[in-house]
Amino acid sequence: MPGLERLRQRGLNGWRAAERLTDSAFGSAVNPLRHLGAIGMLAFWLVSASGIVLYIAFGTSVQEAHASVEQLAAWPLATGTLLRGVHRYGTDLLIVAMAAHLVREWLYGHERGFRRYTWLTGVVPIGFVFIAGIGGYWLPWDQLAQYSALATAEWFDALPGLFATPFARNFLVGDAVDDRLFSLFVFVHIGVSLLLLFVLWFHLQRLSRTAVWPPSPVAWGLCGGLVVLSLAAPVLSHAPAQLAQVPAALRLDWFVLFVHPLVDATSAAFVWVVAGAAAVFLFGLPFFATQRRAARAPVAVVDPANCNGCRRCQADCPYAAVTMVPHPNQRIGRVLAVVDPDLCAGCGICAGSCPSSTPFRSARQLVTGIDMPQLPVGALRQRLQTALAASRAPRPLVLFGCDHGARVDAVQADDVCTFGCLCAGQLPPSFVEYALRDGAAGVLVAPCRSGGCAFRLGDRWTHERLAGQREPHLRASVAGADGTAGGRLEIVDAGLGDEAALAAAVQQLRERVSTLAPPSPDIVDAPDAAHLPDAAPPRLHHA
Image (cartoon, rainbow, N blue to C red; front, side, top):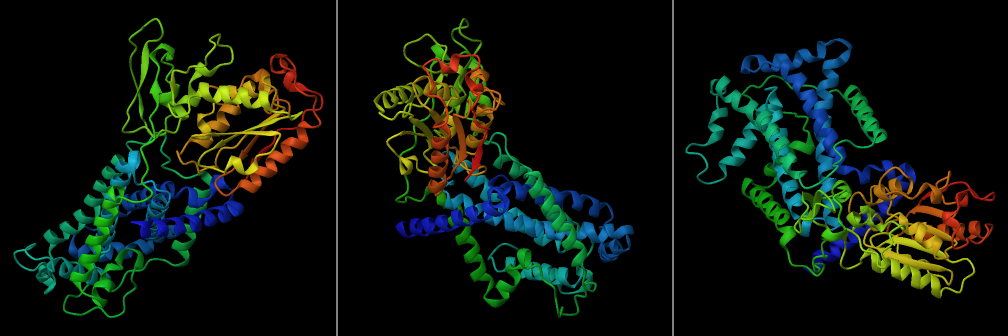
C-alpha cells in the first residue's frame, strides 16, 4: 500500500516537526507529545479515582439517580463540582491522549513485528473507553441520558437479529425504565471500566518499566488544568428525563457522544459500516503488506561461555525479552540469559549492559555474554581501533551515534571518526575508555532525545551508565570528578533531524580539546587523568 506509506511518511515528518517545536518550549524530557501513553494512564487513574468517590454518593435507582447527582453541587468547598468536572473532563483527556498516542505509534511504525501484540491489545481498549463513557452519561438519568440511551438503543436495533424485540421499546414509556434496567446502565459504565483495566494490564505485559505516570511537571500541569476547567466550566445536569417529551437543547460532550449526531446526520447502517471498517483497519495494520516492511532484525544471541548470569541484560531490556534459566556450567554462573525471539527488538541494549566489555579482560578478542550478530561489540571495538590508527588528525574525535537518531555521517570530518549503533544503549561505557586509550582526543556520545528513543529506554540507560548511576558504568578514574573525562567526554541528545545541533556539539568538543594536552596512551590509567588543571566543566546538550 504505497499510498498509505506516503501518507505515513508525510505525517511522520509533520509529527517530528511538532515534537521539535514543543521540545523547544517544554524540553524533550517533559514534552507532552513524548508521553502520550503515560498521559492517557494519568487520565484513566483520575477518572477512576473520581468515579469511585462519585459512586459512593450516587443513588443507584431510577428515582434517586438525578437528585443524588444534583446534590453534588451542595458539597462544601465545591468538592462535588470538582469531582464531577474531573470525571468528565478527565474522560475527554483520556480520549484525546489515546487518539494521539495511537496516531504517533502508527506514524513511527510501531504496529508491526515484535510490537504487534502491544498494538493489538492497545486497539481493544478504544471500544471499551467509548462504551464506558457513553454508559456513564446514562447514570444521571436526565434529558441528555434519555437522548443518549434511546439513540444507542436505536443504533443497536439497526443490527439485524441482535434483539428479539427492538431494544428502543424500553424507552417508549416512563414505566419501562425500572431499577432492573437501570442496573444494566450501572454495569455498562462500571463493569466495562473494570474490563478496561484488565485489558490495559494485557497491553502493558510485554513492556518493562512502563510509564504509567507522566513526568511530574506534566502530571501537575494537567491536574491543575483539569481543576481550573472543572471550576470555570462546571458540569451541569439537564432536567430530569421525561420519556413523554423529546429533549430540546442539549449540551453534548462531543468527545464521547459524537456518534449520536453522526447517526442523526447519516444513518445507523452507515455509522456501523464506518465503525466496522475502522476496527478492521486498526486490527489489520500489523498485517498489511507495505513497501516499508523489512526483514526482521536479528535477535540478541547469548554466549554461555561468557554469560555469568549477572541479570543486567534482563533488567535493562525494554521489552522483557530476556529471562534467566539455570546455567549449564555452574562454574561460570548460577543462571544463564535466554532471549525470546518473538519479543526481542534487536536493539542491542542488552549488549551494552553486559559487563564482559570491560577493558581489563585479558582475552585477545572481545566477546560478550550477550551480543547482536549484525553488529557485535567485538567488531565495533576493532573498527574503533582501525579508524583511530588510520586517522592523521593530531586530535581525532570519536562520535558514537544511534541509527535511529541524528545521522552521524552528516558530521563527518577528517578529524572525526563516526560509529553508528543499533541504539545508543548498545554502546558499553567502556568504549569511552577504549577510544581515549587508542588515541582519541575526545569522545561524543549522541543518544536520541529524552522520550524519543525508538526502543523506549536507550537514551535513559546511556545517560545513567555514563553518569555512573547504572551498571555497567564508566570507571571513576576515567570519568573524573566532573564526569566528563577531564573535558574529553560530551553527551548530546540528538534525534533524527538534529544533525545541525550534533555538528555544533562536535565543533564545541573540538574547540575544548584543542586547549587540553594530547592524551598519552596510558592517560586513562593515571590516577589524576580526569583531573587535568585545564579540564572544562561538564556539559550536557539537549538538541
